[in-house]
Image 1 (spheres, protein in one colour):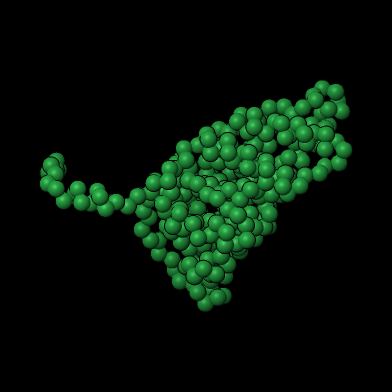
Image 2 (spheres, protein in one colour):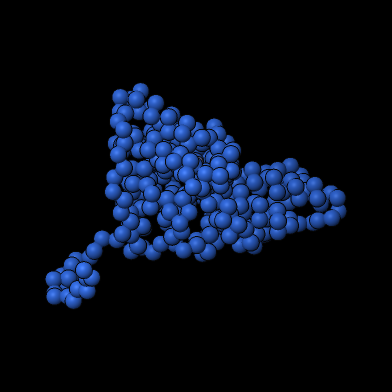
Length: 287
Ligand SMILES: [Zn+2]
């Protein structure tokens, strides 16, 4: 993912053991491949990502179908699950972390904490960025890289005669790497460009791309600055990415200072409830 990294440590740690369990069979299979020359197909990457996301969904508070967060994402993301030539699926994790990530199988997960601070257009900019990672095969490459690294590490260990399979620690690292995909700056820049073009193509306000990065920039300068700065150390500066988005919008003659719209993650009141509300109800307002 790597659009937003605040709180990723907790996420990664939480699922380490789970991933270790679920990935062990497949990873064991890769050990031999690691020794004899590494082969790992796109289908392998997708299959591995799919297994990992199943476990993650089981171990995270996934927003239900009637949840306001889900309904909002349906409205924003629903039109784009096939629009970019890749099959995507999405869910909301009801956690406070400001985060979102994409997996190689096309699974995108958005955290409630992110949806609490981004309006519709800004959220679409993040979604566009994550779709960019999938379309550009960054997610697949991240799985491949992590898998390869662990398989080769194990191959080296196997030669020493000490270890014949991946350790839990290695498996944990692989799991974390999949969640916390370490994309290069180039990949991030390209995903940012994808996001900008995505916004433009569908007539969303392209200035929301800049705005989304400004939000992250402010976060990095705020109370959690030290933690955030540490986490951001290997990633492009949010301010620079915001500047880049602004430059693009200006060049296209679309630039306008963005004003954040109302953020509403509540489920709309259904009609039957509205009818009931007309019956006299005891109100206990304190004055
Ligand atoms: Zn990213």
